[in-house]
Image (cartoon, rainbow, N blue to C red):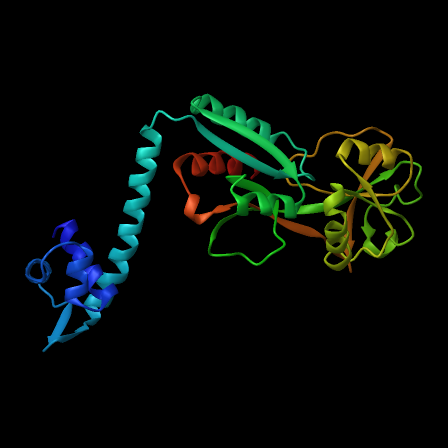
Length: 294
């Protein structure tokens, strides 16, 4: 059974014609027919039932077609990735991460990956959920550590990492800072501080309002450092999510678990990247980061 024979068979099924399959592969119709006869002889089963000038695919042929179509697609991906890895061009990996994340795992993963693959230049940028999503869509990012806000798409690899527990950071001077847990409703009279760029403020506020249930007034900070200074000043509360190991904060800040109707609030975090851009380095980096976050 030769690869060329399989390619001819798939062309016949795709084109629904021996003549069109021959033209597509730049061979004669007799060559296509001979290849099909040899393939069926090798397998010992009929893949196509010929009826005058038409044909019908057998059950065995349907199975063989589906499996081989997938195998050829994988083979093309292996070929392209092998060529890319063997080229002299500089290889780059563009990684994005949600601006709520502040743990050490990403830095550790980058250090480990760079030690294994020094030929790869890594660039990193943070952003809101929408900014990271747009980075993947436009090709500015190869993969992103992000929270799940959309239904999973078959066009993307959606590598689930963990359900991150939500916490509330409050000033130690706040009357709520001594509580063992907080309900969303407990925070109604305080301002909610959001880390967001100016362009994404409305989008982020709508997410906190409609998905997390915060009906509060919103204050905005460009960075987590700025947001925590606002917390220390007792201007409001900062929602954070334990994606990885949370960094230590000033003693002037208290962290309290967040609940909704007596159930712990969590958010699902994943590594996302476009299925069509799946490659060796992306998969290797994703696996290194997955192990560190889990």
